Image (cartoon, rainbow, N blue to C red; front, top):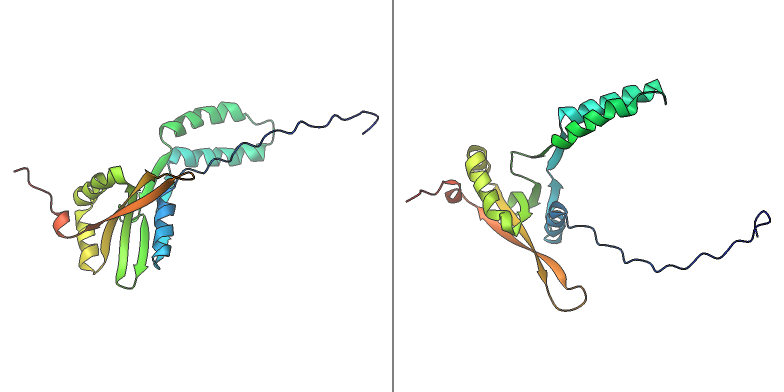
Length: 178
């Protein structure tokens, strides 16, 4: 009894099972690198568009103006613009998501899903051939890691497995159409 009112006991609700967070390919790649004994660092980052940066500036100004500021009139058009152009994800050298140090040297890893491995190899070959060649000439390696989810019998039998594809000088040469 609080303040003369009788409180009813709250109904006991069944807890919903927590959803597992969606798999993050870069995180799985870094975890696998560490499992293999490699030192690694994430090398991809988000570059917000000029529109998103403009919003941050506008919000700072509105914060200084206090609660009477016209938030909706300023932020709604900017939010619509950001949805159209939020920014880009940037990889080091255009293709390295994770940099790993092994006993044999450095590996620049492009991580993706298994279905996109060929597209990533093509991207490296067609968009960044010179820097990839220089990377390899320096004694480093380039690998594309493709992650695929598998099902197996048992308790929540889902698991991820990686296929590693080594990028060599030969794979940087565009294939001829004949």
